[in-house]
Length: 121
Image (cartoon, rainbow, N blue to C red; front, top):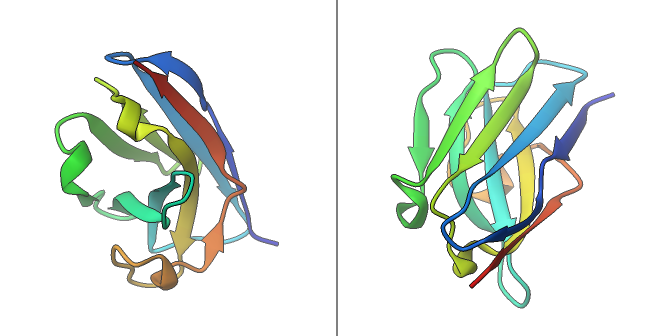
């Protein structure tokens, strides 16, 4: 059974940092990513990483502030969020793809339960 378990959300002031982690189990994946969904908005792509090679892609609004990484030995993927802004407030979801994946949520096969990130101004 595939499971993705996120941790690390919380409340932070603008300019601060948080680190999200996602522990994956049940199978191996081609790519893993992070998405977020703010109240009243659609789920949006944040970042993704290939499991082999560690190639990363970010949405423009987080480039230079967020860093996605993976630990193959621990089967985890993390999202380091620095210089956070109030507009980063959202529920953040970890996602995993069996095969190639893009910025589209539909290209991911498995999802975590989500973790709340709130950035106060």
